[in-house]
Length: 244
Image (cartoon, rainbow, N blue to C red; front, top):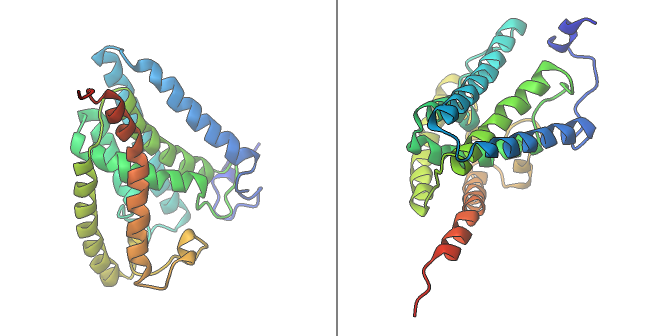
């Protein structure tokens, strides 16, 4: 078997099928991984530290391999491969969050990381690269670990966001978007899809033309954050002392 065929640029194998057997099977594996990690609740700090280091190394390795592969096939450019997309930034920061148990990074990983990565897992942008091509595995591995890291820090390490977390991440994310807009203008890129809609079909096709789709993206992000915060609303309501 020629394993090199699973790393080539012009892949001729089976293409990706949305919600096909491979896609659903991969999602099931990611769910199973998160369930298995719950067994570390109550484990010693030394054990949990090893788990965090393991997750950090895996997510960094997955992202680094993505850059190495693009360099190898000649598609690495500053217009497309700088770590400026939200998921790319958070993947690198997630490693530091896991190692140092950094709460400030956790807030972003929980809301923007999980929210963005879930979209990437449900509707991945893998083009012609279906299972078992490297690009397929890399996409699901890196985004799956981004979701797992946020869930692990919440369910095992006991971290939790607050309403103020949402305000903080929205304030900082909007400043970041303005900065990236000018970076895009300077180098001819479209990081964060802030300078225009992407060429491939996405949910953004349902939104108005530039720049009016940007406020709608903000609304979608806000709704996503609120949905992710609902478990904590329920928890706080259940543990709220009864008043007489």
